[in-house]
Image 1 (cartoon, rainbow over the protein chains, first blue to last red):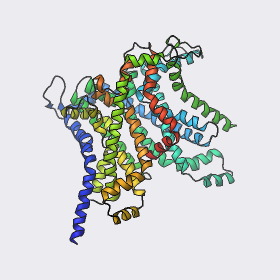
Image 2: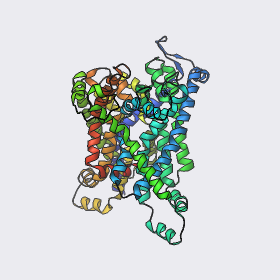
Image 3: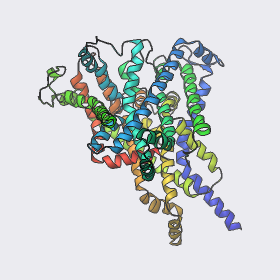
Image 4: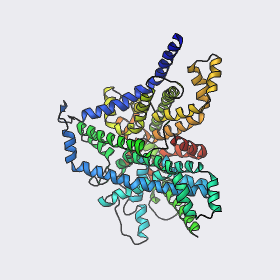
Length: 296
Length: 267
């Protein structure tokens, strides 16, 4: 009895020893900063106030009255609406196609997948050329059809669409991989019996393939949704959030607030809003959609 | 008929997808004076690359990125292996709670905590150091879950046999579990290395000296140093310098690369 108890104690000590290094970093760079952002968001802390002053919810009030914040927030929603469904749909098409074809299979997969391996900052460089007015690739191509010169990145109403197309191009191939994996798990027999019964191809897709890939779709949409708040590197190289904040996104706005305007209180309040948004996405995943994919 | 049309469309899409890469290589290896000419000629040059290599300290950037990427993965390897083993094989008090603590890192990635983490590094006097760039990523909840999943698939009889031989749990972990979990470590490595090779915003914020600058940051600063629209030859050459290691690695290990990406996603 006593040795069993001592054994139990020893095992506990051992487990916590194993967890200790990870926990240190987790606490220092995940929990402490979350708490820190929350705390600083209640203070006025910018270049004019060397000693932070407690101001309660004033940063949040200021944020609610800040037109730029609402613009950036709305941009981010549109960015998500534009990138998430499109890239998922394309990824599904890519996977179904790349799974079936015989000719140039490897090349086709590589063509769809390689943008995943390229840093956002390099993609920004390449697409900057594509979108450049005058001698840019897209302008020259459209000129063949008599379309006049368009300044994609310099026009407020077009810049977000241009960014969305670029991000869909980058992400779709990555999501394709998850669908390829999902397709491997669907048993071939189901397709065979459908064929015997003479079920039309599109019906097979909507009645068998699509529902069976639902867990993959949910998983991928969470990644895509989170990414739409994380991917901002391209802004630094392409537009700096402009023109007039038309392409600005939340995380980039945090970066500007913190490291350009040095308004630490507001940067913290914005960070807190982002944390809340991400927790909301996680909650949707856990309690609403995610029944089949578990972390355990 | 519809089948034919849809196949043609998909092949066309694959070609469209490749255009940016083809253009990048095409421009980088062409003489500068032809960079914007629409004519198709087959002049070949490496001059753009030597300009870039001399124009900015890319060798320093390379070394820094290598150090950071290897450093992060080495530490992640240790921390994640240990934590994953605790979750997979030991019953301990507070397991559920600690598990949720780890999940939180996946929900709230360090990428969005740039400002508070910057403050922490300042307090630790680690700004503008390579260690500072690595710090927020040294524990990886993703790695922990991936390895835990792998460890759980290993038969329990192995443990018992090893314990009969007089092995401690610590020895069982490093001598049996780690070597048998190679595929999971490869996935983990691929994801970790490609992620940190490509990371930009955090290294940009943390570093301000050339000695500690990473490739992505170097590329961005290099590209911004030109007047708009002037230097496509140099910028494409620099872009290739940054992306080529991962592209080559991908081509060499295409199958493993794809598989590891697939498996790492489905935890």
